[in-house]
Length: 74
Image (tube, rainbow, N blue to C red; front, side, top):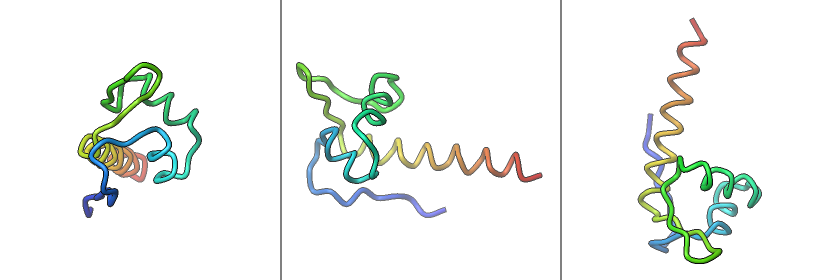
């Protein structure tokens, strides 16, 4: 499985950046951030996610989903 690379020039991503990249709502992204599964920093009311952490998280989620699919396929 090829590794996902996030091609965004910013080092720190906002919720809006992630929403645009993933084509999901702010509710989805903030729910993940509040759940603590995606490492992030909160400045006042604003969340920021390091691009490298977002990439790592995407690849981890993809690997987990892939592994779950293989278990269910047997």
